[in-house]
Length: 257
Length: 321
Ligand SMILES: Cc1cc2nc3c(=O)[nH]c(=O)nc-3n(C[C@H](O)[C@H](O)[C@H](O)COP(=O)(O)OP(=O)(O)OC[C@H]3O[C@@H](n4cnc5c(N)ncnc54)[C@H](O)[C@@H]3O)c2cc1C
Ligand SMILES: Cc1cc2nc3c(=O)[nH]c(=O)nc-3n(C[C@H](O)[C@H](O)[C@H](O)COP(=O)(O)OP(=O)(O)OC[C@H]3O[C@@H](n4cnc5c(N)ncnc54)[C@H](O)[C@@H]3O)c2cc1C
Image 1 (tube, rainbow over the protein chains, first blue to last red):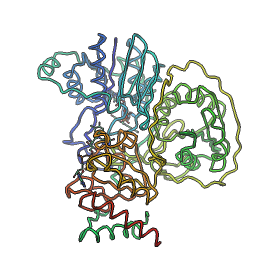
Image 2: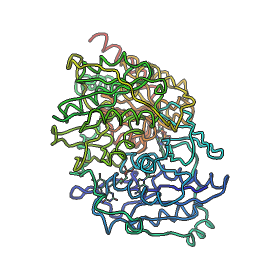
Image 3: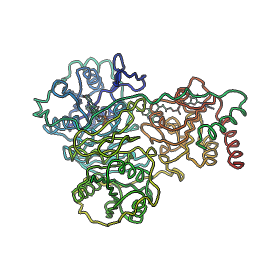
Image 4: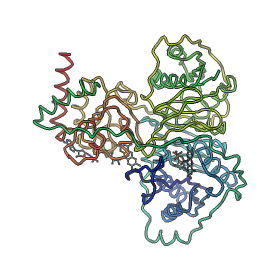
């Protein structure tokens, strides 16, 4: 079973966000594996352990992303691939990133691709279904359970709280929703082993992709923080008075009741 | 003349509000709006779309479209695109819209602006605002090449009134083949009437509610305000309520006029689902709780004291006017 995990290194959104000239200031910020991609790595390892095969973790990103790839290797993935586009492409929107990932995956034998359902920083949830479409394979998003039997798959998915059971076949792409599993922490021996596992770096030339055909379709005009809300009003006084005041504020000041 | 194709969406036999919001958004960027209604026994809803902003409604019915699948809906949508040649494609940022829109975008080698909360400007000059970094920041984006595709976050763009348009309704057939995923079963969760993502008022409970019975006073408050009850992941994980009530990054993303958070600490994954609410009230016994950082009004106290008093106060207020 050839299993691929799409992994994005993300800004840890638990952190405070600073803006500098319309850009998010990333200096000194904390970066992590996108939390939904941790579920994807965990699921891939479990499938491999049950069925045999190889787990390859793939990212499109800068050299810094090697740290997150090594973490995935330490969890138990077998090998990692980082596709570096910085030298060839100035701007890379969802279209670009998906085309690059699909360009790589088209050259591989793929049985199963597991991605996150959404990246906590960019937040579009586009990349994985786009990749499935480009590879012309079926996909199921926001899954909470995956059962495989030969080339048959039964997948449980969360659709806004409803639980759907989907029947489909491999090759297949799925995206992980919270609840799929509990990701393991890398063990110390895992971390040691990870240092020796293969981590390949590829560029567009290696994938026979032409940067002229990967120009972004979107343009970011600016980024900004939400308009500063007047600091919230913490009410004071006897509880009855606070409650009466709150009801009156909601009616007369905020006008929402 | 620019033309938009909008995917309308029904759930449990009735149209979701976001369909009307998507049509209103499409009107901002295109001159002519065609709504697409896909499913089984859905034609009854076409007139509502035709009167609330759509110039034309195309209805595609087939037993195999009873449940959404990316292949089924994808084939229909792409075929209707071929027949109508739109410049703009609009979807709701719902479970369905999030699943389908990237597939269409990939097929067209187009950009896609996901989770739009506001549109500035009109027509070809339109720019789109969307939250990033789990709602901690926003970006303004425009299309630089190709068709304009976007999904709208429910409850953010005002829909048009009934009578805004007198569109035509046409039933069309589309041939379906090779459906690679099949919906074998759906367990629908009862959420008690109001669709959370469309509710104007939400009273949400967290782990501080302490039990499923603890939700009763929240339900009473919601009832008095004509709202719905929601929950944090913490409350769902503790089995105080069903996951269908979950609000946040992995639950529903909501933008009510009023959000009352009771016994919720305010983790970033929860805030990602509600920080865009117009007015936020936090009730928490811990004055340091992070939820106060996004709240417009806060009461530090025990929710079991505060909520019933608040219900009584609103009852008084709403009866006496
Ligand atoms: C106009 C514009 C210009 C941009 N320019 C740049 C740029 O120059 N450089 C840049 O780095 N970003 C750039 N971005 C951001 C970049 O396009 C997105 O980060 C990327 O497309 C992923 O989108 P997302 O964060 O919404 O992820 P989602 O689509 O929400 O991610 C879902 C899942 O897809 C997979 N995935 C997403 N991204 C990757 C990846 N990179 N590698 C492997 N798997 C992935 C993961 O499994 C993830 O969980 C730009 C965006 C725009 C709109
Ligand atoms: C990948 C990922 C995705 C996630 N997605 C979501 C999501 O979509 N939605 C979500 O909500 N969470 C999500 N979480 C979980 C999130 O991180 C928090 O764990 C969760 O939101 C906490 O729920 P809570 O606020 O109810 O509980 P707690 O953090 O335990 O807070 C309970 C609060 O209740 C207060 N309290 C206790 N008793 C009373 C009382 N009697 N009166 C008043 N106040 C009282 C306490 O002071 C405390 O602030 C996600 C986590 C991860 C890792």
